[in-house]
Image 1 (cartoon, one colour):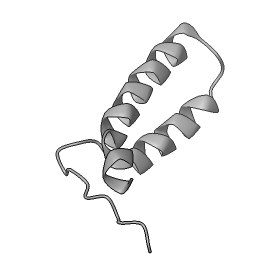
Image 2 (cartoon, helix red, strand yellow):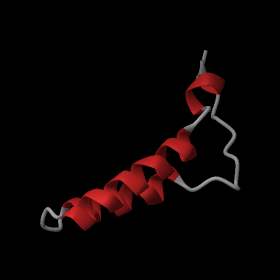
Image 3 (cartoon, helix red, strand yellow):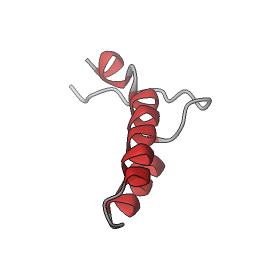
Length: 57
């Protein structure tokens, strides 16, 4: 049986866009500001993917 495609809440940030931003960020030199931005992006990514696994299970 195929896995159901999770329904995305359009009010949440898009995980693919956030992943792209994280990849760009990791290409920059290490700094405190990069660390702060990485933490912010991870929080957004967690919000964007929240519930996807529960609905797909």
